[in-house]
Structures are given as C-alpha cells and as structure tokens.
Length: 546
Ligand code: ATP
Ligand code: MG
Image (cartoon, rainbow, N blue to C red; front, top):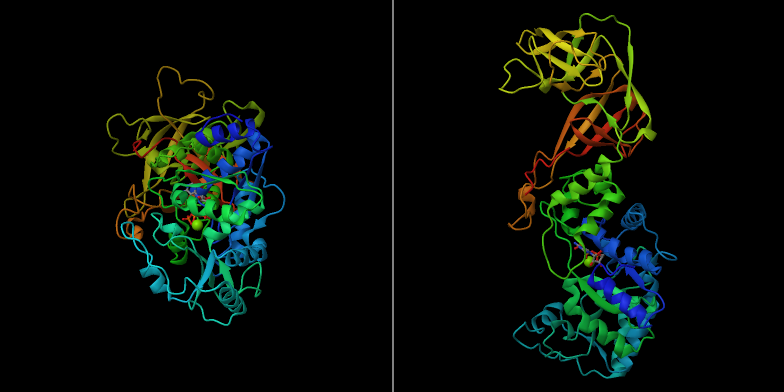
C-alpha cells in the first residue's frame, strides 16, 4: 500500500510496528436511503485500503433506526458497493446481529455503576444537557441503585413502559467539556418491528453506543469516519475502555466530500424522491451511485474521481466539473462512436438512386479492436436542424442554401432547395451530392463543415434524455430551502434518430454520439424495440469551468 494520505500512512506505521497483522476496515451505512457520491469516497477509502494492503473490509449495516430503514435500501447498497468494484470480506454484517451482545454489555455497564435508567422526559433530558458554555445538570434519577436500574432496564426490554418514558444512559460526567460525554443515551424504547430482528426488541441501542462495540466485536483495526465524529471519539474510547473489550479499534476522521451543485444527505435526497421531484432514487439526475450509474457513469470514473480528490482533514467543496472530467476521460478512451441526430430535419439527395450505399467506419478512432460498423447511406437522410441555417451568422461552417458541407464519413452535399410548410417552417431540404468526394476532397474547392447524418429509411427512432445539473446554485443548501434551486431544465426529452448499428444497443452500453456528447442506453427503459439513451455528459465543459 502506498502512503498516499495520512490515514494510509498511519495504517502502514501500525502494521510495521506489529500492532496488527492486517488492516481491517468497515463501511457502515445506515440502510435509510441509497448511497450517494459522498459514500463513494468512504467506500473507495475503506475497501481501497483492504485491497491495497491485503486486509479486509466489512460491509456492516448500522441498522439501529428500524422505522427509517428497509430491505430495499439494504439491497440497493449491496448492489452499489458491488458495482463500484468492491467485495466485502465474509458475510454482510448488521449491527442488529449484535443486539444480544449489546444488551449484555449494557447490563455490564449497569452492574459497574456506569449506566442508569433515566425517567426524565425527553424534553427534560434535552434541557439539562447544558451548552458549549454551560455544564449540564445531573438527572434526579442518576443515583438509582444497580438493582433498581437492572429491574427498570428489564421492564424497558419487556415493553412495560411507553416510548419516551425512560432511557438508559451512560453515567460519565454532566459537566464534561464534551457534550457527548454528558451521560449520553444508550438505549431508547421503540415499539416497532425491525427488518432483521422482527418483533424481538422493543428497545433499540443508539448509534453512538452500537458503533464502537460493533467495531470491536468485528476486530476492526481502523474505524474511519467523517470529521463530525471527532467529538464522538472520546465516548467511543470511553465505552471500549470501560467495557475492556478484547479489541479497541482506532477511530480516525477525514473530511467529508462536498460537491457543488449537489446535495449529499440521504434525508434531502429522500425528500426529492418522496415529493416526486425526481423519478426515484436512481433517477439519472440524482447524485446517488444508482443515479450516476443510470446516467452513464462508470465505476472506473467514480474511483478515479475519489482518487483525485484524495483524503484529508480539511473541508472543502469539490467542483462538479471534476466528476464530469473523470467520466469524459474514461469514455473518450473506451466508448464507441456513433451518429445520432437529435433534432431531425429531412434531406432528400436528388441525384442518387433509392438503393442503399453500404458505408463503414471504425467504431473507435484509436481502438481498431472494436471493429467497424455499417453506416448505410440512402436517398433520404436526416441531419440536425441546427446544422442548417437560412440566415447564417458570420463564420457559419455548416449547411446554407447554395452551400456545401460534408456528411461525416460520406459525400459532400450542396443544398439546392428549402421546402417549407404552410406555416413557413422548414420541413425538408433538397440537396445534391458530389459523387466524387467519397474519402477524398472535392476538386477545385475547399469544404470546411462536417455534419452528422442518419439514414431516414434505416435509422432507428430513439428517445434521448438530455440531462443537466439538478440544482442551479453552487450551494443548494445555502438558502432556506434547497428545493428552491432545483433546475427545472435538468431533463429534456427529445425524439431522435440514431444510426442503424445501434438497433441492438444493450442496457448500459455507452457511446459517444459524435459532436453531441457521451450517452448510455438506459438501464431500465432501453429495449430492443424501444431505444432510450441518456446523456451522461457533453463533450466539453459547458459550465465555463466554475
Ligand atoms: P447522510 O447524511 O447522507 O445520511 P450519513 O453519514 O448519515 O450520510 P451513513 O449511512 O451513516 O450516512 O454513512 C456511511 C459512511 O459513509 C459513514 O462512515 C460516513 O461517514 C460516510 N459518508 C457519508 N457521507 C459522506 C460524505 N459526504 N463524504 C465522505 N464520507 C461520507
Ligand atoms: Mg448517518
């Protein structure tokens, strides 16, 4: 493993010092939503370290809030981690696998006089916690005897109290400068079924209590988390020291990923889904891994992105353009080329026969191994309406009345006549081809423009979904409501015509549509008789490199 960041350096030192025989990390999502690009950073770090150091990385669901969690999210998270190219060591683990052990540890804390049942209301507990400047106040129930606490905790477990009537708290120090050490809550009553344990439990452990113990039980060596958990580390250490667990993982914090024009909070992303502002968690506008996948991003591009942003302790905002750079970079060198006409305008070539001319072209200019595809040329073709102008601006290099342009991989054509409908709209162009220009320059003149085209008779209709950024503000979370800066033009659907070689495009097959950008056959909706492509990204940065 290379010491490319402070965490890897730390682990290398620990291994060299013989503290551990191998590094064991974990990725601990809560199954309360789909993973987003921020999680990709954590996945690449935790699984990356395991791969690079021949260690292990566990996938553990931190499932302590059953009412917000579901099997759908569990399945989606497993799918996303696998798709990212990683494999967890052993079985999938769940914090709920440890509910019995966690309960026994709670009994141990009570017996040690380190935990008590507090019968204050949640409001009272909140009000007596103090603030950054003011110490908290001891609960009137803090000095209950071990026997009384054991009896009350047992009643909590049996469901003899109502939700909110009491909690189990650690007994540490209500005057601690660290609020997380002011007798944190360990267990609360929740009379809800759990997706893994069913009706077995009516009390559930808190995340801050569950996480260190789960890490210790799995013999995690390095517990890597984001900076907001720095203040929780003293409790992490207090708990494992107090219990004397055989393993005491080291928590190390790093800065979370913030990406401009994006929200990375499952709660906010869920709001977009619940309010039908997007079409589900995997909507290609979403910054979820499933959404990015459907948008056409590759695992390689996401891993490359995480590699480039690196791991530090300083908070910053990464430009969305970097993510786009990474996918462009990958697809430039891998995606076959094809022609697609997004805004079709019919062109009749007056001087050729009805018969088809079988032209071919390389699928990729630098990858001969991808072979060739056929691009049949026919008497009627489509070009993009934007490639013709009746009133061309200065320097316009595409088709004009009386002017010439080259059809990509084909002839030079001249526009002889414009056909309009009654409303005065252009419906067709009549053109003639210079039949002596296949693969060579026309004689006696230069033709600069090259435009895309597709056979009108053999081309395939396709729905093309043009995606743009979901938010039109660099920091959607700056204002009162992030929903106010949703970009209403983040999706435009057009009916296009694509070259016939795309007739069998498979879901997730990616292409560069020449001059238009990179596109992917939609994972869900693209079928043999109904082609659907999503624009992953344009060919160039159209956002001015913000
Ligand atoms: P969210 O606020 O979106 O729900 P979370 O941190 O609550 O995020 P978890 O499911 O608890 O989500 O996260 C699993 C792991 O992913 C944690 O270790 C967490 O620190 C990490 N993680 C979450 N968001 C980011 C981010 N933006 N950048 C880096 N790591 C992240
Ligand atoms: Mg969380």
